[in-house]
Length: 523
Ligand code: NAP
Image 1 (tube, rainbow, N blue to C red):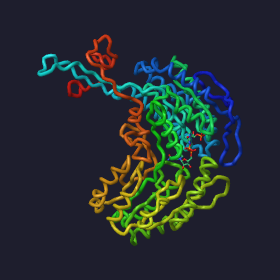
Image 2 (image 1 turned 120 degrees about the vertical axis):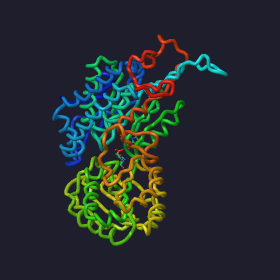
Image 3 (image 1 turned 60 degrees about the vertical axis):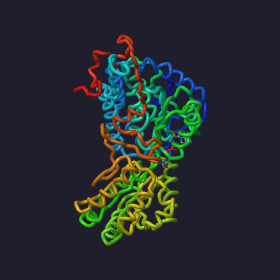
Image 4 (image 1 turned 90 degrees about the horizontal axis):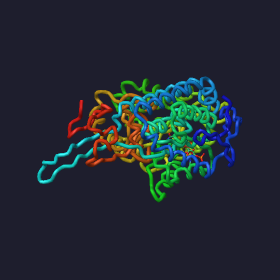
């Protein structure tokens, strides 16, 4: 497929008029063809008009038809074959096997949402039948279902060019909910975005859906993004990226005459707790597992273990010493963009000023290569210095040595909101772990025992979210089928004649949904 450098406004490919974005291969620092001229207000306007026009018919598609659409997107992405793998790898510096794995995850995610749509549980049908004889007042017939919010703006993430980008989790969950989607492509992988965007547009066509169900916009300098979020036809936003970007979009959404929800996944340092018995019994294995998790994908994961918390002593010293032996064997790795590399270098520089550098990975051999780092600080220093809690996006972590369990608790209370908190523990650690758990539940969206936070399963029970600044809305997840709930709202129908009710709520339950009927869950 020849890349065109054009946006997709519904089914129409359109060239922008603003300054062009060009992918830059971060491994070689060379620009790639074609140029993607940025959009402006007019194209945002057109995409929003089409999305709004498509909304009412798209949201009324049957569960089967909508699920087929999601399955078709997955098929169309797979049909792109090696071209997608090559382009995504060149644009991001991520190795081919990683991109192949990410494609499988992306298509699996679309199919998981297809299964979720078919099952219809997300409609959350509740029926309270009329009780005309009830005293002192009759009860009306009340029926509730969820409906989609409306067109959704999705901002593709730089660090997952497939799974959190054009047809990633935000798009899949919004389409599953019945919302048209307008994607603002990430400037780091415009060619990958075009390939996937065209696959989605083909699926729209294959399934006979209105063209406004999907559009893809390009643009740098924030104009397209802010215009999109400010458009009155956009009813929700999905975003993964920097804290400043997420906050700017949240503020734009709140400043509208009609404010809308922004689901921004922004910043997390993912504390890892090494409890004494576990640290004593398996310090070597913990050091190896930690280094593998820290350096995976150049550390460019929102779940990267950026903080290690433990009680000081010989066992922690052995762990730090072992990591200090292992880390110098880790090669520097190409980061996603020159901007992300320089932000990483600045973050490392800041930590160098506030904590003790104890180990480094191998030095860079080429452009934009991030070198791994391990820092050490006392709990007192951590409690007194906000710099030590800032996310350094890359393979850098800070060990915080605490005087005792009480100081572990104080450090934990001091933490900002997190996507994850990990507990490495043995039987003898259960008491202090149980004591800490209420704090961690308040701080994080996912709590893990004896694992590593990198690697986020796409499934029904997953929570990839957490209190601010991990996300802008701690009540939601951006991964897993519960992500669909972000784009829905409940509507109640009171005393409707059956013929006027939506199919999901009709008396005969034609969709065979497991309803909550008069307080009882149907089998
Ligand atoms: P980013 O700068 O936040 O950009 C992500 C998207 O948001 C881009 O499409 C960007 O559009 C848009 N955007 C950013 N600031 C905006 C603003 N003020 N107004 C409107 N739109 C805005 O993220 P990035 O480029 O991927 O990486 C930058 C840093 O983000 C990294 O160094 C890292 O610290 C962090 N990051 C965190 C995660 C995570 O999962 N926690 C993931 C990726 C990145 P424009 O092209 O117009 O800027």
